Amino acid sequence: MNFIAYKLAISKKRAKQLLDKRLVFVNKRRIWIASYQLNRGDVVEVLTEDTQPAQSKKGVILYQDDHYLIVSKPPGILTNGAESLENNLKIYLKNNRMRAVHRLDKDTSGVVIFAMNKGAFEHMKTLFKGNLVKKVYRVIVKGNVGIQNFTIDTPLHGQKAVTHVKLLKRGRDTSYLEVNIETGRTHQIRTHLASAGYPVIGEMEYNRKPIKNPLLRHIRRQMLHAYQITFSHPYTHKTISITAEIPDDFNQNLKTFGLAE
Image 1 (cartoon, rainbow, N blue to C red):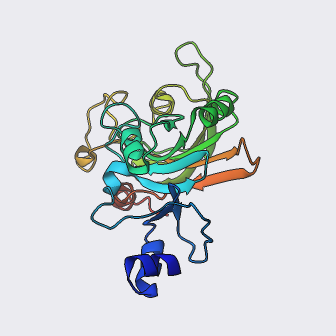
Image 2 (image 1 turned 180 degrees about the vertical axis):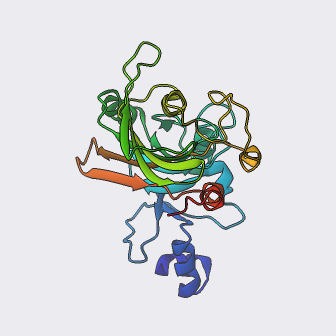
């Protein structure tokens, strides 16, 4: 903090505000602890609110170390590819080697893991392939779910697919669910829930029945949120569990349908 105040000719209070706003980087790593000790040769960068990319373009950084970056992806942006969250983060962090380890649909919000280099990517992919990463989602569905807990294990695309469902709250004609997937098949949650008679609201590909409730017609995206991810860190072997806050539009729909906890 003293270094920042001295170099920028600002007060210590203002330097502390920059740290609190997560605008300070040391050797490309975000730093927010005022007592952080600098070493000779460290490169310190300070962003301003004007130069910081919009949250809608880079998401919210939830966790970062030398190997992995975990971000809460906003809805409406691709995970990777052209004009994606991955590309925006590469520019923001000045790291062309980083890659998304897994993907969320464009209109799905929530936790995404990025590897900072090829080795970290391969280690994390091994965990995913071994079903050693616990993925928990929150979802609003159409229909009155009458069972507290149930499992859907219908194979998808000829492959094993297992989806565990827990009822959080039941409304008049919608329900709020927590979903834990053992496998990660394409559109697994959307497909499984639709096949069980509980399509994700705002989702059109697997929900082709006429929408009678006028409140449902105004929902602009699928109400599916990657809420939490848990895994054993391949390098430190510590358990990492990261939770992404429920987005504003999702929370608003919970209130609209009487599902707010």
